[in-house]
Image 1 (cartoon, rainbow, N blue to C red):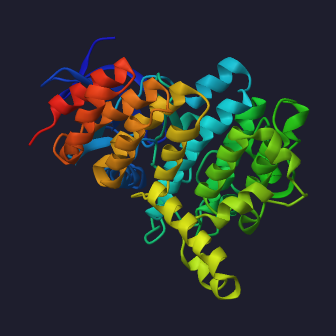
Image 2: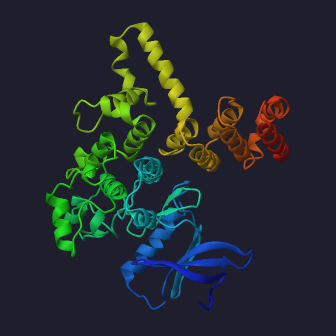
Image 3: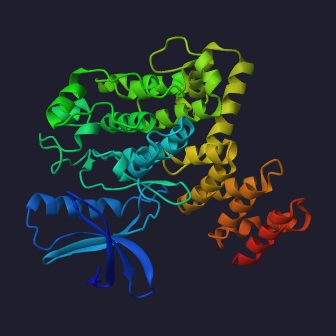
Amino acid sequence: MSSLWIWPFELQEKIGEGGMGLVYKARYVKDDRLFAVKLIPADVNNKTLLARFEREIDILKTLRHPNIVRAFGGICEDKQRFYAMELVDGGTLWDKIQSNGYLPWEKVTDWGQQMCAALAYAHEKQIIHRDVKPNNFLMTKNGQIKLSDFGLVSVMSDAKLTADGRTLGTVQYMSPEQIRGKPPLTHSTDIYSLGCVFYEMLTGHPPFVGDNPGPILHAHLHETPQPISQTNSDCPAALERLVMSMLEKSPEDRPATALDVAERLSHIRMSPQRVESSSAHVRHRTLPEEALDALKPTVTAFNGSLRCVGIALATALLILAAVWTAALLRPDAGTSLWIRTMHEHPETAVRVSAAQAVGELANGNRKLLETLMTVGEDTSAVAEVRVEALRQLMKHPVRANKFRSRLNKLAKNDPMDSVRLQAAATLAALKT
């Protein structure tokens, strides 16, 4: 196609379109870097659409998370409205489902935790996405998931544009309360939609399908989806129970938060057989997850019980809580998922990607630099993960100076050649 221009961008090819505008691959003429540019055609004059587009720009500029597409600002003046965002080059989750039929359950748990991390971060900022679907999860070539398209977003403190009683969203993934159009919506509506996405990842199709919207909307309100195991016999029973709990008609019956969903996905991924055997027909929780709940870093959870137990038990619980809190200290609800993945995931490539994400998040949390340094020193970890953790410290050349002596020790004495070389490179990159 012949190039189009919206200064300072050369629009090279259209890579997406939808109700909120067109998306182009674009070259930033000042330094030739590639971006994605989203714009509304100049001939569009729908005031509500234009207002939503401007709102999307404002909201995206406030979001900084490895699993959310990063926006770099835009222009809303005269007849042209556009903004630039990072170019994500691996297609969409929908593309992956279409090419595979349905996905291995391990992929669903791995990618699902990233999707939950994005939603947990948005929800912590009181943002409801309202259009969670496979097409809105973009993928990098190394398997990192990024949530996009916040055009229908509802900010819980100010929902005038989107919570006006109308049904907005994509029918295959809409929650019953969203269909009824009775505001205010809560974070639980995104949990339901994410359950629909998980269901499609595991079966190849959404929970309810049809030739027109009416029967699909009716099914969301009144019908129960077919069991996942009828299509995918490899899906662990614990994972099927989790997805079906996310699809409960009443918000109160679904998992409480995206972080709760992510923790259950993590536990299923690490030990699917143990999770299944421990189930005692509990609707939303299994015994290992209740044990995890006891270790969550909320001191208030212990206040009422410490008086009723022995001093030794109280001390042990407090120590566990302190260790857990120190390990998971985070600027947002999703960071703990990346830390856990970096330490525990069975696949090295996933752990390396997690180290990269922690490096990004360290911009807002100095404690994460210590986490990266500790991983770099961990001789029990695989070399690739240690090297990546040390490489991420190079992105913070001033704040990482406090690790100079520890890096010097690694560069001289570590038994792994690749770690010694990376430690020396990181040390050379530090600024005094």
